[in-house]
Image (cartoon, rainbow, N blue to C red):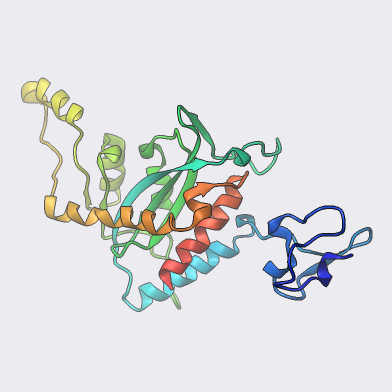
Amino acid sequence: MAFAQFKPGAGPVSNGRRRAPAGWRPERWPRGRLEVNPLQGPVPRQPPTRADGRFDRMLRAAQAKADAAGDAEWLVSVGSTIVRAHQHAAGAREGGSGDPALGRSIGGLTSKIHLACDGRGRPLALVVTGGNTNDCTRFTTVMEAIRAPRIGPGRPRTRPDHVLGDKGYSSKAIRAWLRRRSIPHTIPERADQARNRARRGSRRGRPPAFDREVYKHRNVVERCFNRLKQWRGIATRYDKTAESYEAAVTPASLLMWA
């Protein structure tokens, strides 16, 4: 019995011998989206991934619409969050789509979402890496991924009005990268950096500027992660490839712009 004969609500999908995987059940796909296999008959198409860029284009269109309406706040906050990976997330085929973005630590396999959001806690750009990846090593990657198209003529907007980050982003390289692009930023200095500067005496230089009132707005990125993790498939990673996991995080980010 072909899978295409089943309708939504008809119960478990089976061909008489085994149950079809959840992602291949036809009730989860619109009608007409079938491919014909000469051996199996009509079967649902493979679920879309991030590779074709459709989710990214939808997210960029939502950001462009909000920016044109003056709804986007370019007080950008940067942060990251750890995601525990289920044991079934391991074991991707070798030579597949590249790095699976899984890191091993004492707690097991983990992934990390590096994200930049606007002043209202809506994602602008994100990158998925292994859970043992340092935050500051992906700062420039996340910032360069910010790209809000214009509705009509004009270049996409890539430059925030102000950037907020926690102590994990306190480094000379990041501050110099932001200064070269004339981007104001508020990043607190780590205690060890302050001690090293004091140890140098008169050659220690001035401490970086820090505005406590502006820094209070950085909590929006933590609230953004809380909203994303309301989705079970994002709070715990079950996908074997990084592309499939990002293909789940991107539509969830899109719904926050709706």
